[in-house]
Amino acid sequence: MEKVKIIKERLKTAQSRQKSYLDMRRRDLEFKEDDWVFLKVSPMKGIMRFGKKEKLSLRKVVGDPSTIVPVGTIEVNEELSYEEIPVAILDRQVRKLRNKEIASVKVLWQNQQVEEATWEVEDKVKKQYPHLFE
Image 1 (cartoon, rainbow, N blue to C red):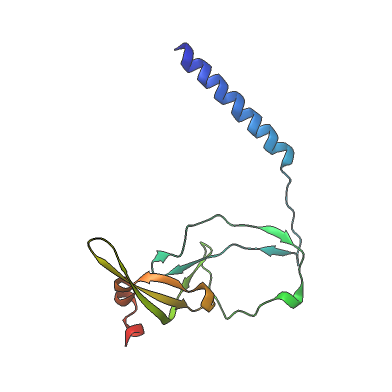
Image 2: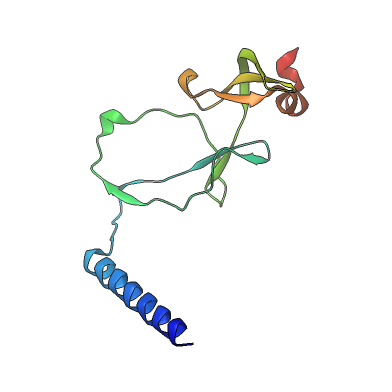
């Protein structure tokens, strides 16, 4: 029981040290109307997530109107995600493992550039989006 008490005290000390360090560096963000901010929006493809879900990233930014990239209408839902729609199949490859072969296709998504196309399992894409293989 003594060792458990010592461990709890040390954990409490470490937590309080970390909290005090964080409190010194923390600052409240205040935004005014017409401020520019970064929003982190995670795309979705079909039902599956297109990467891991992350918190909203709200930061101030110095805005430059010349750097605005025109984007088509992207409908963002209340969870700050949007559905990605595949446009075309760019490439196909078969990876050989010891006992099986996995067919993959390189999919170009609607709001992405060619460099951001992703490799997906061919069976899943064919099942969800059969029109791409016609």
